[in-house]
Length: 468
Image (cartoon, rainbow, N blue to C red; front, side, top):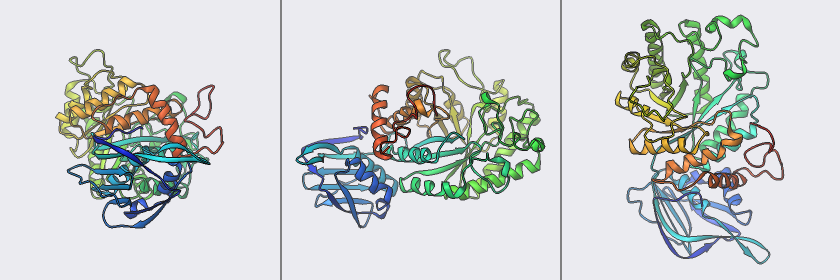
């Protein structure tokens, strides 16, 4: 099993899945992807048939549901059936994932069968907001986006931050996309499936640095490598948007509008704003960036959304910080940090990415929290100690949540997506990285079967050499 709920009591015996399971359930579980999950987690030995029921419930047989008692969902399994109850649609879907996680293959005459050990469970995640970030690169195939969405849903993430690196066609400016970019009509069904899995899609477009929509180490620029005449939209080196210009702010506004329309209703928009190289930190420049972000925050507030921004450009590395933790801090002084943090709209959520902080606590998060911002820590798939330090700090300090980032390294880092999810769900976590690898591989076989396709098997397209 991957998940270890907050409260669990083992029972006697087990429920044996029939070849066809008839369940009464809330309509949110009557979705093709969830029925597909059920059959796949059952190793093809059982299919799910549903009929509507009142409330946030899923019931098989005559078993009665447990009271929630303040938990997000409860699950009772005995020899006569299954009873799942929850406080919301999303909690019901997460409880359903716990149920699927308990399917165990057993030998039967003529093939494989499935049993579920009797138990009583009540559960609530240790960290409420559990976000994961996925980048769509030119090397990313459409099935890889769908696979990641399915993995995130199975791992009970609450939000998926979706960032297109020159890989979505916009109506407002064709040069924002490479020739191989996806049409919105190709992405819309994946957004729908994400919602069916209990995930809210958070649109993301970097509004300051990373204007190239390409990683700096490779020197590509999605716009200027197609149309150099658009240079005036950017700083001289092309790395940042020249947000001082009304035409740039107007373009970025149109991009935000298109992304919100594609990603559907939601509570957030990620504006990026990290690694703005060559920023002068003059008072005039700091006024401009903070005023710009406050303007975007007000625009999004009218749409019922809050903006999320990376925190590195607003952070000063204090001499008092743990010397064994390497922190990424862009502000040159405490005074510059204080100036910007004082001016920024406090509705902005700060996503504090600190990829080289191996030791608890990750001290930078408290800077933003004490300044009045909801703060998320953001591990990357680069280390077990670093991920653990972030999740432990988020729990201990009651932070807004965790935003796990993946960038370009999923071919080796997908197990960290699982590890971060498990650490967010549980008060403590005993899973090591080797176990995270094997569990990730097992989970991928169920959420997106490879069906004999070598390239689609596992979490790397190749076994020799680096791949996306």
